[in-house]
Every structure is written in C-alpha cells, then in structure tokens.
Length: 158
Image 1 (cartoon, rainbow, N blue to C red):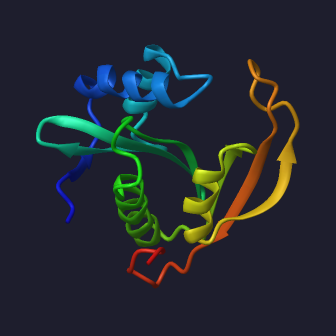
Image 2 (cartoon, helix red, strand yellow; image 1 turned 30 degrees about the vertical axis):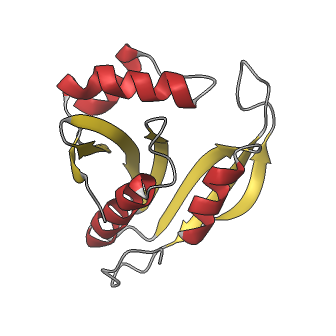
Image 3 (cartoon, rainbow, N blue to C red; image 1 turned 180 degrees about the vertical axis):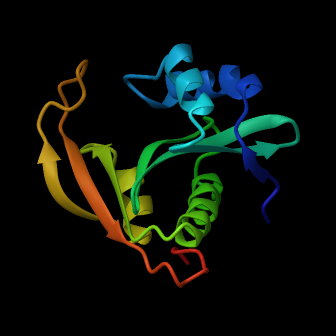
C-alpha cells in the first residue's frame, strides 16, 4: 500500500533533497545546483514523494524538445525497495506522454545494478558508455534510452 503522495518539489525541500543526495550518490549535487534546477521550471520538473511530512524520494527531469532526460532519482535510505522510485517514475511517465515526449535518456553508474533493474522496467536499454563519467570515482556511466508512446497514458512498469 502506498503511504506517500507525490507533489512538485519546492525550495523548502532542498535540505531533505541534500540528505538524499549525500546518502545515495558518490558525487552529490550541491544546494546551489538543486536550487538552480528547482527554479528552472521551463525545462526542468522536480517532484518529491512525501510520507507524513518527510521527503522519502525525489525525481528531477529535463525536457529537450520531444525528449526527457532523467537528471536524478533518489530514495531516502531505509525506504528503498518500497516502490517510491517507481511511483515517481510512473507519475513522470504519464506527464511526459501528455507533453508528447517520445524518447527518454539518462546516465547511470555501471555499478548501480539496482537502478539498472528499475530503468529496464521502464523500457530503457543501454546504447553506450561514457568513460570516466563520474569525476571522483572515475567510474563509467551507461547511457540508456527508452522510447515512449505518447498516446499511452498508463505507467510504463508493472
């Protein structure tokens, strides 16, 4: 049973987003980067999953013409595996289809197999590798692409 709701991210959420970033990613985004993303509502869309009053996950996407780029997706430690990320992706997919988006892309660390499984459920497939994509770890990133049917209003994953 889903116990969270999804809403647009707001400036007041940045502190909680930073906690997720620092816990989940070896190269977390800074407060300034997140604020820049949240205020760019023309090409960016950030949503949060809120349980009670706490942000338990968030998703940031960017729109470029008829494409969607997943910038970041994170879940608060201890809330992984509950479907938070899937709920955020489901909601984003419905919105993207309404906007006429036909393709989506992202980069993900080669070692992040849990994220790979999630993205593959949404139709993403690897198309390349960005060598040394992550500056601190020098880890490669897989480049993933997915095709979307703009007429399908149902979530992508089961």
